Amino acid sequence: MDRLLNVMTGFSILLLGLVLLSVRRAHIRVEYSVSWLAAAIVLLVLSRWGVLLDRIAGALGLGDATLAFLVVTGALFVLVLYRSSMVISSLKDANIALTQRLAILEFRIESHEEAETPGR
Image 1 (cartoon, rainbow, N blue to C red):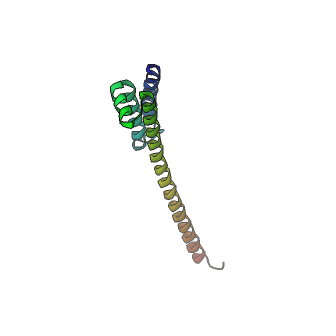
Image 2 (image 1 turned 90 degrees about the vertical axis):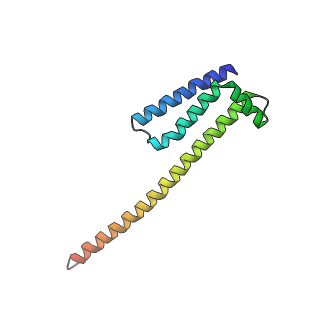
Image 3 (image 1 turned 120 degrees about the horizontal axis):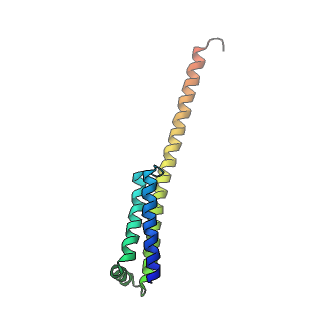
């Protein structure tokens, strides 16, 4: 158990550093990095606070704190991925609307040019 928690501590610190570096270099926007930072902090707290992990295992009806840690970690990343899917869906819808507006504007410009050009 201690080895897993130490590995997860290292992983959460690495994730924190990676997200902060990505924000600094403008590879990820701040509003999208918040959920990843929160996930990394939750992992760090759970991997260092064994009593909390034992309480979570008891509340979930699991006999092993390691299993509780894995369940919480899995649920946490499912939530982060769900939020990312929502953002991607919203961006896709906005992209479709923008493409449609562009097509309408191009049609109007072409119609206007044809109306101004005599003999066509």
